[in-house]
Length: 303
Image (cartoon, rainbow, N blue to C red):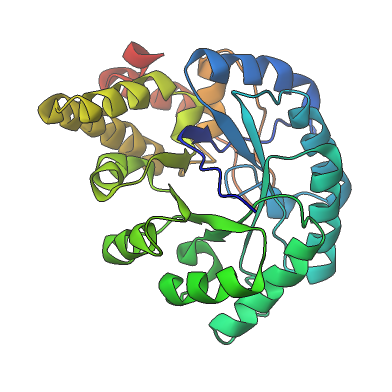
């Protein structure tokens, strides 16, 4: 399979829900249009930001079916199929291929964990077989899964065992390892950067594509940062990265990228509803304070 690299910003969208906690896929067409207008090149759905492991398989089918309608040559749909169950992940992978996903991805199982790289690759291989004509990306996020092996070793083994292996979403701050992955096999693999707050660092190490939660509402800011970097305007790029950092620090103060991120979508006119338990919902007072603090750090200047 030819490696067609994904470039640019890929948003990790929130899963829209109504006030009762049921999914609300009717929001997705407007959501998609907003992302396209800000220069985002696609979505990575039902991952961490999308509360994927808090959704049922049937709910994930529905969300995937709605997002796939937004697909175009310029807007990619990557479907995260990771679960703690191999069989469920295989079912999701099979469905993703049937509906025409541009790629699938899975994180490591986080309950009964693999003991070594070989076991992890075997787990991924079984999933990839169900979508053998679709590019497969490993989702490396050890802070969530608790699974942390050498990603160079993973790629070396996965490239032999998984015919449709294309690369990985690298959500980790081990930049030495990330650089090694980027340069492996003469830059063959598509390594997608996964930490929005240090995108500039990722660019300096050679990434060309990135997946992140704050690309949902700050596509213009990050695309401007990328252009600054490409044109050698590093001081300007640093200033924009600092804006990103201040916004993310504010989000962390109010519960993190999902708990604060969903209310922030409401601020830009796309109501994704509440989070699903065990994640908390901000009170009206907290929401008001979040809005004021975001204004202070320049959030509304980049919408």
